[in-house]
Amino acid sequence: MTLHDDVVSTLSGWRPADAAQESLRQAYLGFLAA
Image 1 (cartoon, rainbow, N blue to C red):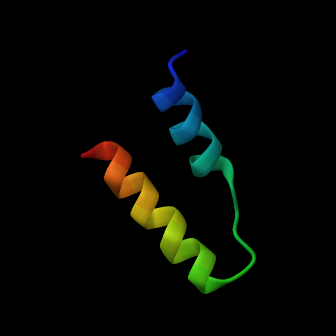
Image 2 (cartoon, one colour):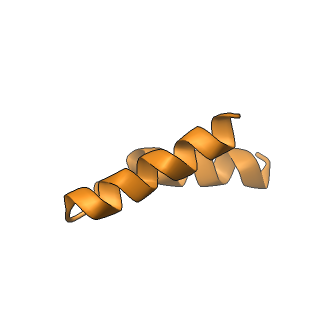
Image 3 (cartoon, one colour):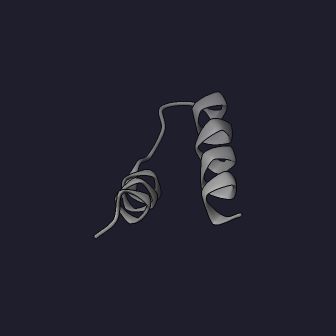
């Protein structure tokens, strides 16, 4: 597994405590997908 795959997996499984953190999680996932 690459570092990229590990980060995507970790962020995909993370359930943030609030909407601001969810927005940041989505931004990171979008960046990693690009």
